[in-house]
Length: 196
Image 1 (spheres, rainbow, N blue to C red):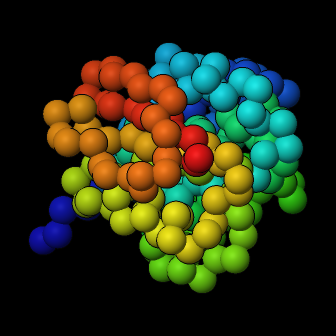
Image 2 (image 1 turned 120 degrees about the vertical axis):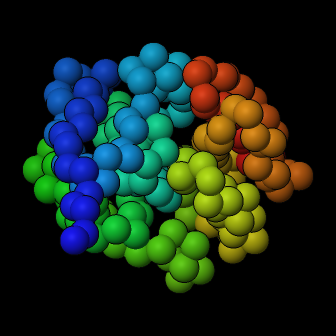
């Protein structure tokens, strides 16, 4: 007899901008969705305060178990980003993202059900801000960063936010990225880079 996966409700509260205070309710089929704390997201968006207006945003692992999911894109849109592209491999989570975000942000948000690295290889868009916060143990942050660089998907002076486990070595990034901010909290290491 198979054991059914855990199903629970995860909540993410938008903490700033036009949708401040709005709560998103995401169904987590496996019990591994761990939305970021308000404090960590508030720190990140304080760092990015002057960079969000009209920004084109990419959230590569939008519904993953990483601590940033799925509130980073919603927070960026609420605070003035022009458009956000969310990529999520699991069909149920991609559908959940669309169900939650489309009514709030309309055509300013688009969700793609796809493997993040394969999606990058097909994309021709360029982004001003990218969130790279995959599940920590899959080793996806480093190849995602390299793909963003090698495929020319970053706008001039783009910002790249990379999360990883604090106890592990930080993912290597292209030499042309400058580390601007860094914060550790709990099990999380958060780094904000600027494309030089």
